[in-house]
Structure formats: C-alpha cells, structure tokens
Amino acid sequence: MTDVKELFDKNIRCPICKKAFVTKRVRTSRLRLIKRDEDFLNHYNTENPIKYSVLVCPHCGYAALETRFDDIKPSEIEIIRKSVSAKWKSRDFGGVRDLDESIEAYKLALLSATLISAKKIEVANICLNLGWLYRLSENNEEEIRFLTLARDTFIDVYNNDSLSGTNMDESKLSYLIGELSRRLDDKDKASSWLRICLELPSTKMNPGLDDMAREQWRLVKDM
Image (cartoon, rainbow, N blue to C red; front, top):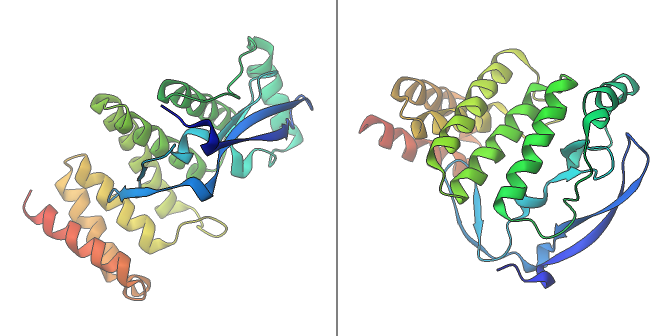
C-alpha cells in the first residue's frame, strides 16, 4: 500500500487546452533503492517514480512524459485537439496510481506521441517503461511485447538518429539493445549489440557499464 507521505501534489497547466490540473510526484527524499535490473529498471521499497512520469490532462486527454509535456508545436496541438480531445471522456489520473492506471497513462502518452510523430527515442522510452510496468505487474506476455517494441525502435534510433540532447550515448544505447535482446531470447542480436558496446571507446571510459556489458556477454554465450 502506498504511503501518501511518499507523494506530493504538483500543479500543471496543459499546453493543449490551457486548463490547470494536479498530478502526483514521488518525493526523492523518500526513495529507497532495493535493486536495479540489468536493463535499468529500478526497484524501490517505496513508490516507484516511473508510475508518475507521464502527465495526463483530465480535461482534454493529452498525455506525455513530464520531461516533454510542454514541448509541443502549434501544429501538434491541433492534431491532439482533433484526434484526442474531441473524443476524450474526462478522467482524472491525478491521484495515487496503481499499476493498471500507470500502464493506461503510458498508453495514452504512446498514443499522443504516435499521433504527432514524436522522436523515435521518446516512443522507445515509453515502450520500455510499459515493459517495465508489466514486469512489475508480473504480466510476462505484455512485458515481452513492449520490450520488443522498445528494442526495435532503439535499433532504429541507433542507426538513423542523433543522440544529442537525450539521456543516451552510443555505449548505453548499444548495451541496452543487447540486454533487451538477451531478455527476449534473441541470442544473435544480443551478442552483436553487446559486442558493439564493448568495442566502443566510450564504453572503456565508463567502467560500470563496461563491467555490466561483459557480464551480460558471458550470459549470452551460455544461452
């Protein structure tokens, strides 16, 4: 059960309908990390912040990761108004979220991102978070589905897009693609991408990531 003291209210103004709403955030001072999965999912003995990383306007239905919620062009605003807001039935995601509500919030964010042709790195991150939420829900089938979508989109990003201005570099992204492939039992892709990671000069400058890549490489060899 969520301790309400772990959360606080944050006031938001929607860039689509211009109306105000309130959402929950997790107090970082309350976070207690238990472990970190090899694909970077953090587990806490407190509320997990990823459950609240998507903002959903209860008035118009616009949803996006908080980090890009306000970063929307006038042409994209019109797309959301016509394709989302016109069909939206008011629903409030501003309270304490269970895993099902968090998953629904991320799916709304994925819808908005797809409609406005958001950057592929954003779409991939939404899919990755959905995979993580399904892992926390112990729904293996849906976890695999969204991790596959995330992995394939990350490959597209690596091959075609700049990573400038993102929280990824080539080393971290190639490692993540390799680790997701390992989790998906795709030995060939896991081996190939972890090898790419280990051969990058930037990986050598990140001993923690280098150690992780080598450990996962050993696991892949035994698959």
